[in-house]
Length: 116
Length: 113
Image (cartoon, rainbow over all chains, first blue to last red; front, side):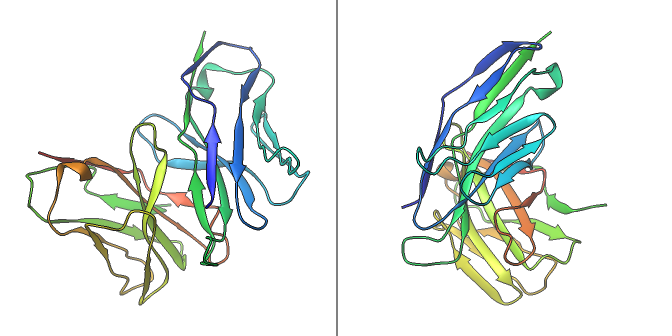
């Protein structure tokens, strides 16, 4: 079946440090890949997406590249800020094994804390 | 812009009680879904709907019922609450064919004693 594996957290960084959160996936067919962010006390928000191999999604200084050969979609940011403190979820959208409609499958989430 | 609205935000139930979590969206989205969020497990799909009158099961449907009588509303019913249903529940919606790009409500925290 479809699954997403994220690096375990929590991750604690100093302001202006470089961020990488690893994400790998298993999916049938050709999935679309997403990163969602959840700020404290809020619902999830779409951060960025990529719909085919070698696409790069980007938003708010975050980037992730769809790597089909390594089945990965790692999230990166060159210089994190305190306001980036949140939980980050990697997700994929693909059909189920029985050919059912495309659904979103989430990873377990990675808590990021950025210290001033 | 209301977006996706969930009520209540917090609820405490006793084992065996029933309740309904309400979800409404004002974006005319065809697709709506319910997820539960548990520590270390990400979000898991409970039920979803691709339009009024159409519902289907997700990954963890047992113990939950849904209905979709209008485009705007998608209530989630707990028939007989169990401690294992203690969780944070999120409703989400999107346009048809864009099921990866979900708009989420703020969540409903449910505790079952």
